[in-house]
Figure 1 (tube, rainbow, N blue to C red):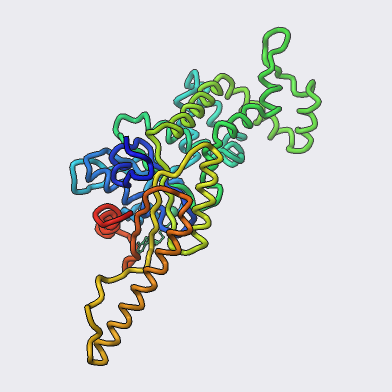
Figure 2 (figure 1 turned 90 degrees about the vertical axis):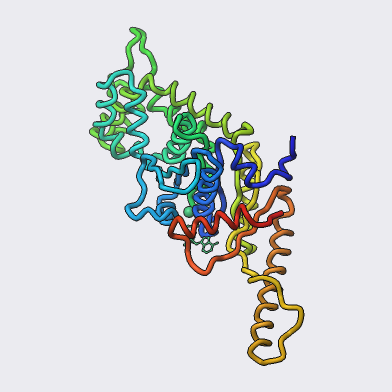
Length: 360
Ligand SMILES: Nc1ncnc2c1ncn2[C@@H]1O[C@H](COP(=O)(O)OP(=O)(O)O)[C@@H](O)[C@H]1O
Ligand SMILES: [Mg+2]
């Protein structure tokens, strides 16, 4: 078996079932995630790229003019495999889960129509991260795909979905939920709000109607929590297995590398590690310098320009390598293209730079 340090990006893309791209905003994380998907499809795999980033950048990078939705769409590409893409929508994902996991259609309808669910559940802290983890679970199980690539949002808490099981536990272990689910002596759920001092207090703060909605929600939700907890645990196990790889994306600027190191620490905190790094938007070098400086002034100016760029590129790479030295994994260097990446053609150029050129 090869060591992690020697495993190339192509090898990861060829063998992983889950790839999570992380890094600070603006470094090209979404672009790289899309390019990894394109490469996987070129290698004959059936890849789906899922973006958690609400910005429409993935659709942009893939050249999908109408944008992406919560359901995967298949893109037309050259190659033996398949490339699909979707943009996570927390509310639709939550609705889908309620429908799929309710004991009866009636239970599902009661939850979906509930005011607390409609207005509050989606914005409770952690719901978005939890839904991302649920979605990852579902995509990994989906027989249409053999590789799921996750493009994380451009925030420091992008990896909070690693805490999804804890988030969920917080939700299920909410005092309100506990009280409501507490069996009474007669084996019934507590229904009498007035009898519960804590509920009376909450009612005074949020208003009676909101409280009634919340109670109805927790009651309707009853019985579904086991499945939620189980899937969250399964996702966490999956992320810790060899089928999952974390790709760190940075640019050669010290601040983005600093952020990359923050993400590496964050992964380590969850007993996970970086599988490969990509340094995107490097200074391009435009080929080799001619053997001698031309005699004419125009030629000499061009030569000096090229020499200057080359020196800048080398210095940048040396500095970035030093900063990344702690991450003893394969690093791929991608130069800045003359234009933004907003079509499958330009994405394919990035793909080529990631996979067809030399890296170390
Ligand atoms: N190597 C590159 N050369 C030129 N433009 C790039 C390159 N990589 C990314 N971009 C552009 O940079 C911008 C930010 O990229 P994006 O992938 O959205 O970053 P992130 O997801 O990290 O915020 C986009 O406009 C994208 O087209
Ligand atoms: Mg992005």
